[in-house]
Image 1 (cartoon, rainbow, N blue to C red):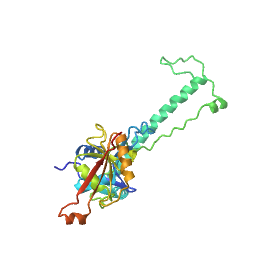
Image 2 (cartoon, helix red, strand yellow; image 1 turned 90 degrees about the vertical axis):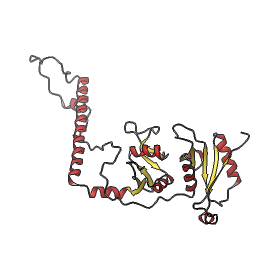
Image 3 (cartoon, one colour; image 1 turned 45 degrees about the vertical axis):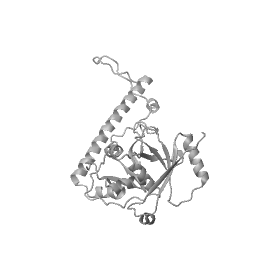
Image 4 (cartoon, rainbow, N blue to C red; image 1 turned 30 degrees about the vertical axis):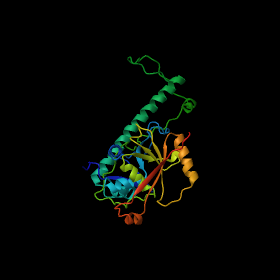
Length: 291
């Protein structure tokens, strides 16, 4: 049963694949077991990297899998943005610019108000102006003497622009989608893609494995609930592997309480000889004993 989100857009930016819609990010994690890597910082605390948000970056394997399932289409983000602006109706563009202008004026008034408050506090600290009282004005009070130029020059200077250019913090698209965006070809994937596809078909969650020195980290369920069980490395069917790499991978996996998984798919010629409709994928798990 097709979802209301499908087919969704995967934006191609500088040979990297992104998803910007928060609802789609949640959907593919729940329904397609694809987590990706969040890259967006939080506006309130942009210098931390513990809690991140949209956009979500996908591995080429993840983008290719969604493309082959028909759940997503890959679009060039730059051309899509230009087309959306070029064919944007006049009233939509006018309303959008008006909203930005109104938000900027509201932000500017807030900054101006805070600047005036800081100026009054600075004057009070210098004893040049009495703080405002809540009672009725005293008409018999002596008038304040005009400020000297030296006193005015000693006050801190605050620049208070009236209008700010703001960007709305939206999780979806700001511009309306075009009718027929230019769809790109399937994403190019490494030779380890058959292994990724095989493990994903078995119900595993898969994430990049760079931090453990492998290609994929393989989880039995959502990474928020489970630790990874395997460090996976894909190779060609007849690729030669150094024995020391196998030993090192097995020791590394055992040291972090995981199995070292290697696998690959046979070529199409070998699949035809074996009268198979699709190339066969074989995997082996290596564990180092005595540790």
